[in-house]
Amino acid sequence: MELDDDDSVTGVDWHHQSLVATVETSGPGLIVVRTQYFPGWHAQIDGLRAKVMRADDLFQAIPVERGKHELKLTYKPESVMWGSTLSVVGSVVLIISALLVWTYQRRDQRI
Image 1: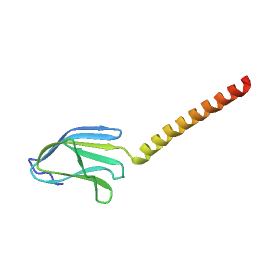
Image 2: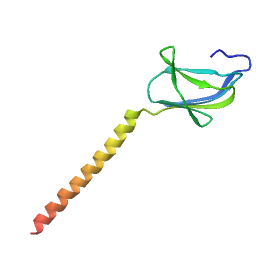
Image 3: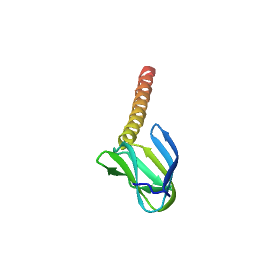
Image 4: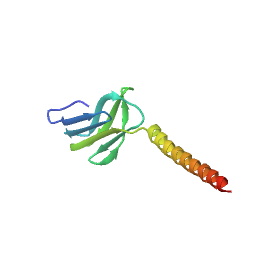
């Protein structure tokens, strides 16, 4: 997006996997974030979900309407969510299995 005199991006707060910025535009356009596009990036404009698109085959672009907006960009890949879920389920199954084995061994020792 080419910035006109009335367009601005301020208050940029960049963390490890997130970005928050205030964007003010004189017309609709795209905000191009010069970080590598990769599935797992999620955008919000004023708290509403926005589409993250590819820009120049490498970067991220988020469409914005005219006016002042708060942009939030976070990286939450599905692979991490699935991995965390499977790890928790696997741990629960392991604990239940260990408790069942321990219970049956104690019962067999009493007989």
